[in-house]
Length: 163
Length: 98
Image 1 (cartoon, rainbow over the protein chains, first blue to last red):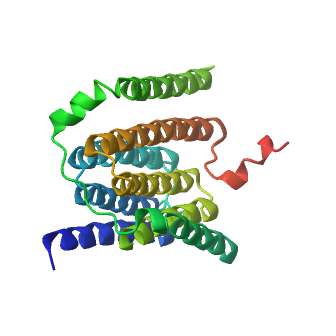
Image 2 (cartoon, rainbow over the protein chains, first blue to last red):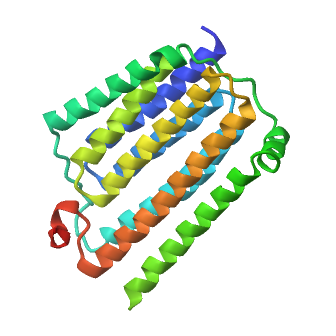
């Protein structure tokens, strides 16, 4: 068993374990831990595919940013509850059938294209920076504009709340 | 093939979470899972069609930015809704029905 296979297996197990936890747990904080495990697993999969910058950004943006924000939201929303914050899960056969059908459809559609996707050769960050600030400058600026729009949207929602 | 099945299953799990959770936090968690799985699939597709590493990373970064903005706006809406009505479940918000 090569090192790549071990890395892929570990990342896959981490992501799948987190997904299973998100599916079944009822406590809000455990849900967040499951989501954190899933996101770290996804970062591991990015590393496996030879994309270290994307893996780092995933850890910083998601695990360090979005997840902390979600934990904060859980604390605010459940702050008046006396007991531990419990969330309701309504397992449904219909929902499971739809999710399974979507999964099978994705695999069937992409099987011939993806096949056995192999890791790409690792990219030096300088090459990525040249790409982003050169031919992909428009994409880079669009990403910045989108983040700014999100920030303005959040401020607008907050201001509307005060009125 | 194993990676494809794994990512598709993770996407399906996120979809199932969106369909079965009633709390808005749970819905956002499911959406984040779907976006994460879709991003890995995008990276796999990029590698399969012969894209360069920099191009694939630029595309993945764009999806990451979209997901982060979506989470920020979604959580802001949740907090505003909770402070306004004291509710955080989708089935309690029936006053917005047409």
